[in-house]
Image (cartoon, rainbow, N blue to C red):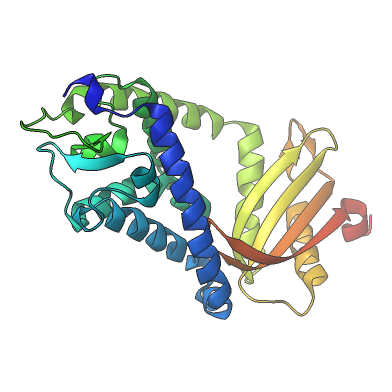
Length: 299
């Protein structure tokens, strides 16, 4: 296709940004209207946000929406296949799923108990994120990002008429994808073999083992300025005592003697959250507690 067929990257980005704003509002309404339902779903509540997102982009970008989300319609661009025809609903939904997979699955699902699977999982997520950005910014030939390359789809200007087949491009970029994957996996392998990661990994797994009320560990960060571990934990059920749950977690972490940068951590900040998370909108009750090892162990 000629270059004139393709919209600028800025136009595509602004169209996508507008769609995300609209999508956030839709998920906000869904979240508010079914709050108790989403809480009862538990750790899989984020899937609701994922399904709504791929339905929004999948339906609008298909033949049903004439290849145009509200954002694309405003900026006069559309999604087509290599023959210039609108996508089927199935193909359009798959395209949206590939686009949103790394964002939703990186937030909503963490494999902890098997380090090899954890490494593979991180590699897939990070590779997809970087590949989506890399192809979007640097694929000057076909202007396709990863999800378009895989499904052989194109984003073109609205009034363009494609009268011939466009040559598939994905196979030409497999080398790029392979190089990105190898670099990322090597980096993850090196990082996850360090003492710092081992200490954090041990701490995260011990939280699951000690507290049955934990839905998932949202973050586990070492603050080197205050020499403190900062843990954010989402709970399955609303506890009678947030402080007691936090104390259980702190006691477990201190018992396992977390060692980072060669010395034992003796201060912990624990943030407990109870509610629901649809990714693009969430609502939580949050409580924060600080613990010192001497206070917990009595030493």
